Length: 177
Image (cartoon, rainbow, N blue to C red; front, side):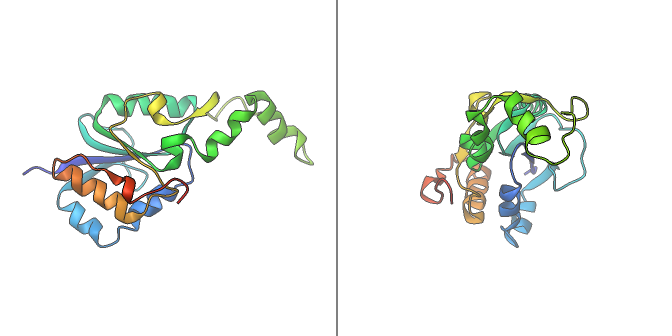
Protein backbone atom coordinates (compact mmCIF):
# COMPACT_ATOMS: atom_id res chain seq x y z
CA UNK A 1 0.00 0.00 0.00
CA UNK A 2 1.33 3.42 -0.97
CA UNK A 3 2.02 5.92 1.75
CA UNK A 4 -0.40 8.82 2.17
CA UNK A 5 0.86 12.35 1.57
CA UNK A 6 0.68 14.39 4.81
CA UNK A 7 1.22 18.15 5.03
CA UNK A 8 1.07 20.68 7.84
CA UNK A 9 0.63 24.43 7.57
CA UNK A 10 1.22 27.16 10.15
CA UNK A 11 -0.89 30.30 9.81
CA UNK A 12 -1.40 32.93 12.57
CA UNK A 13 -0.61 30.92 15.69
CA UNK A 14 2.16 30.21 18.15
CA UNK A 15 3.42 26.85 16.77
CA UNK A 16 2.13 25.08 19.88
CA UNK A 17 0.08 22.69 17.74
CA UNK A 18 3.19 21.70 15.79
CA UNK A 19 5.01 21.19 19.11
CA UNK A 20 2.13 18.96 20.23
CA UNK A 21 2.42 17.02 16.95
CA UNK A 22 6.10 16.43 17.75
CA UNK A 23 5.06 15.30 21.25
CA UNK A 24 3.69 12.15 19.60
CA UNK A 25 7.31 11.08 20.17
CA UNK A 26 8.20 7.53 19.10
CA UNK A 27 4.76 7.08 17.52
CA UNK A 28 6.03 9.44 14.77
CA UNK A 29 8.09 6.48 13.54
CA UNK A 30 4.94 4.39 13.40
CA UNK A 31 3.23 7.16 11.40
CA UNK A 32 6.23 7.42 9.08
CA UNK A 33 5.54 3.84 8.00
CA UNK A 34 2.21 5.06 6.57
CA UNK A 35 2.75 8.69 5.52
CA UNK A 36 5.26 10.89 3.77
CA UNK A 37 5.47 14.46 5.04
CA UNK A 38 5.38 16.40 1.78
CA UNK A 39 5.11 19.96 3.12
CA UNK A 40 5.49 21.45 6.61
CA UNK A 41 7.51 23.93 8.66
CA UNK A 42 9.17 20.73 9.92
CA UNK A 43 10.66 19.88 6.50
CA UNK A 44 12.43 21.92 3.82
CA UNK A 45 9.91 21.89 0.97
CA UNK A 46 9.11 25.27 -0.58
CA UNK A 47 6.08 24.50 -2.79
CA UNK A 48 2.85 22.90 -1.60
CA UNK A 49 2.44 19.81 -3.81
CA UNK A 50 -0.69 18.64 -5.62
CA UNK A 51 -2.82 15.71 -4.46
CA UNK A 52 -2.06 15.85 -0.74
CA UNK A 53 -4.16 13.35 1.23
CA UNK A 54 -4.23 15.06 4.65
CA UNK A 55 -3.27 18.58 5.72
CA UNK A 56 -3.18 19.72 9.34
CA UNK A 57 -3.60 23.50 9.62
CA UNK A 58 -2.62 25.41 12.73
CA UNK A 59 -3.54 29.06 13.28
CA UNK A 60 -6.13 31.60 12.23
CA UNK A 61 -6.39 33.46 8.95
CA UNK A 62 -5.16 36.97 9.72
CA UNK A 63 -3.33 38.24 6.64
CA UNK A 64 -3.76 38.27 2.88
CA UNK A 65 -0.87 35.78 2.75
CA UNK A 66 -2.69 33.41 5.15
CA UNK A 67 -5.82 33.64 3.00
CA UNK A 68 -3.95 32.87 -0.22
CA UNK A 69 -2.09 29.92 1.34
CA UNK A 70 -5.27 28.45 2.83
CA UNK A 71 -7.19 28.59 -0.44
CA UNK A 72 -4.23 27.10 -2.34
CA UNK A 73 -3.80 24.29 0.20
CA UNK A 74 -7.55 23.50 0.23
CA UNK A 75 -7.57 23.15 -3.56
CA UNK A 76 -4.76 20.57 -3.33
CA UNK A 77 -5.87 18.60 -0.25
CA UNK A 78 -8.36 15.74 0.08
CA UNK A 79 -8.87 15.96 3.89
CA UNK A 80 -8.25 19.23 5.71
CA UNK A 81 -7.92 19.25 9.52
CA UNK A 82 -8.34 22.42 11.62
CA UNK A 83 -5.73 21.82 14.31
CA UNK A 84 -6.09 23.78 17.54
CA UNK A 85 -8.24 26.57 18.90
CA UNK A 86 -6.80 29.27 16.62
CA UNK A 87 -7.73 27.27 13.49
CA UNK A 88 -11.12 26.28 14.95
CA UNK A 89 -12.22 29.62 16.50
CA UNK A 90 -9.51 32.23 15.70
CA UNK A 91 -8.78 32.16 19.47
CA UNK A 92 -5.91 34.49 20.48
CA UNK A 93 -5.39 36.04 17.00
CA UNK A 94 -9.13 36.80 17.03
CA UNK A 95 -8.73 39.04 20.07
CA UNK A 96 -7.70 41.79 17.70
CA UNK A 97 -11.14 41.67 16.08
CA UNK A 98 -12.43 44.16 18.65
CA UNK A 99 -10.36 46.89 16.97
CA UNK A 100 -9.92 48.34 13.51
CA UNK A 101 -6.73 47.33 11.68
CA UNK A 102 -5.47 50.91 11.37
CA UNK A 103 -5.96 51.47 15.11
CA UNK A 104 -3.94 48.31 15.85
CA UNK A 105 -1.11 49.42 13.56
CA UNK A 106 -1.05 52.93 15.07
CA UNK A 107 -0.96 51.46 18.56
CA UNK A 108 1.79 48.96 17.68
CA UNK A 109 4.13 51.17 15.65
CA UNK A 110 3.51 54.67 17.01
CA UNK A 111 1.53 55.00 20.24
CA UNK A 112 3.02 52.20 22.32
CA UNK A 113 6.71 52.89 21.75
CA UNK A 114 9.37 55.39 22.75
CA UNK A 115 10.59 55.43 19.14
CA UNK A 116 7.60 55.81 16.86
CA UNK A 117 8.29 54.53 13.39
CA UNK A 118 6.47 54.23 10.11
CA UNK A 119 3.91 51.50 9.68
CA UNK A 120 5.40 48.94 7.28
CA UNK A 121 3.61 48.65 3.96
CA UNK A 122 6.09 46.42 2.13
CA UNK A 123 7.72 43.11 3.00
CA UNK A 124 5.02 42.08 5.44
CA UNK A 125 1.60 40.65 4.59
CA UNK A 126 -1.37 42.99 4.92
CA UNK A 127 -3.69 42.34 7.86
CA UNK A 128 -7.24 41.33 6.95
CA UNK A 129 -10.03 43.34 8.61
CA UNK A 130 -10.69 40.40 10.98
CA UNK A 131 -8.78 37.30 12.06
CA UNK A 132 -10.95 34.30 11.15
CA UNK A 133 -11.12 30.55 11.79
CA UNK A 134 -10.35 28.50 8.70
CA UNK A 135 -13.83 26.97 8.33
CA UNK A 136 -15.22 30.46 7.59
CA UNK A 137 -13.13 30.47 4.41
CA UNK A 138 -12.79 26.87 3.20
CA UNK A 139 -14.42 23.51 3.87
CA UNK A 140 -12.89 21.71 6.87
CA UNK A 141 -13.25 17.95 7.25
CA UNK A 142 -12.25 17.53 10.93
CA UNK A 143 -11.97 20.05 13.79
CA UNK A 144 -9.47 19.27 16.55
CA UNK A 145 -9.82 21.89 19.32
CA UNK A 146 -7.30 22.49 22.07
CA UNK A 147 -4.60 24.97 22.90
CA UNK A 148 -2.74 22.97 21.87
CA UNK A 149 -4.55 19.70 21.23
CA UNK A 150 -2.95 16.86 23.18
CA UNK A 151 -0.48 14.68 21.28
CA UNK A 152 -2.67 11.63 21.95
CA UNK A 153 -5.63 13.37 20.24
CA UNK A 154 -3.52 14.27 17.19
CA UNK A 155 -2.21 10.70 16.96
CA UNK A 156 -5.76 9.35 17.31
CA UNK A 157 -7.04 11.61 14.51
CA UNK A 158 -4.22 10.64 12.16
CA UNK A 159 -4.51 6.90 12.83
CA UNK A 160 -8.29 6.97 12.38
CA UNK A 161 -7.86 8.73 9.03
CA UNK A 162 -5.20 6.21 8.00
CA UNK A 163 -7.72 3.45 8.74
CA UNK A 164 -10.31 5.19 6.57
CA UNK A 165 -12.51 6.19 9.49
CA UNK A 166 -13.78 9.65 10.43
CA UNK A 167 -12.26 10.59 13.80
CA UNK A 168 -14.35 12.09 16.60
CA UNK A 169 -11.78 13.76 18.87
CA UNK A 170 -14.19 15.75 21.07
CA UNK A 171 -13.82 13.43 24.07
CA UNK A 172 -10.03 13.81 23.88
CA UNK A 173 -9.86 17.59 23.51
CA UNK A 174 -11.39 20.71 24.89
CA UNK A 175 -11.16 24.36 24.03
CA UNK A 176 -8.40 26.20 25.81
CA UNK A 177 -6.62 23.04 26.92
